[in-house]
Image 1 (cartoon, rainbow, N blue to C red):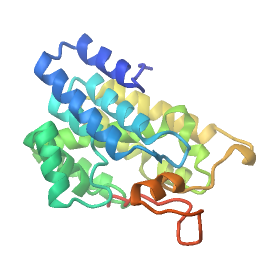
Image 2: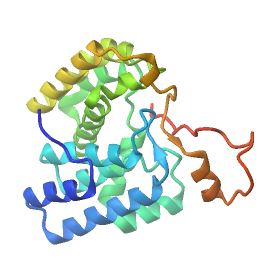
Image 3: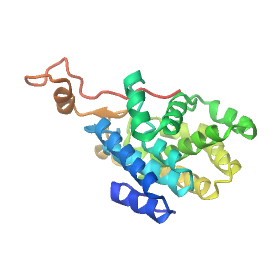
Image 4: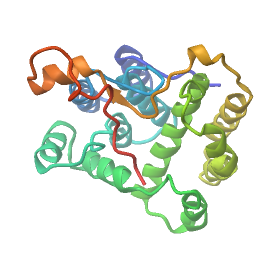
Length: 241
C-alpha cells in the first residue's frame, strides 16, 4: 500500500521527488491556494477537512505518474460542484491554465454514479481519448481516496455496501484494463476492508454529503445575529452524475 500526501508540504515533497520543474511547482501551488480559498470551512461527511480529500486525490494521481495538468486538475476536481459560473472558470484558467480548467470541466460532467455507467466506461475504454483517460484516472483516484481509512463506514447514512457490491469489481477491472496495477490492487484491498469494517454507532456521523460549517457560511455571506432556522446545519455539495 502506497503512502499518499494529506498536506501541502507532503504533496510538494512528492512533486519535487517526481521531478516537477519550477513552473509546474508554481502552478501546483497556485492550484492549491485556489482550492484552499474555495473550500475553507468545508468538510466531508466523515468530518475530514475537504482540502485533505483534494490533496490526497491529487497525490494518488501524482503517484500514477500523470502529467502536472492532471495532478492540478485532481486538486481542483470539486471546484464546480456548486456550478460553474463564467467568473469562476476564468479564475481557474488564470490560476492553473486552460488545460487544467478543461480537465476540471470534463471531470464535473463525467458520468459515474449511475449503476451501469462504470460498465459502459469499461466497454468504451479502447476508444477513449487521452483527456478522457486522464479524467478516468482522476475518478479512480477519487474512488480510492473515498475508501482509504475505511472512511466510508463513518458516513453512517451512505449506502457504501451497495455501492461496492454493485460497482466495485467493475471499478477494479477498469483500473486493470488501464494498466494501473497498483491502483487496482489498492482499490480491491480498500473495498474489502471497508466491507469488513464494523463500527459502534456512536462514532458514525449522520451527514450524507460534504458540508459547510454554518458559522463559516454566515461569515461568508455576511449574515449577522445568532444562528437561526434560516441557516441550514450543513450544505450538501452537488453530486456528479
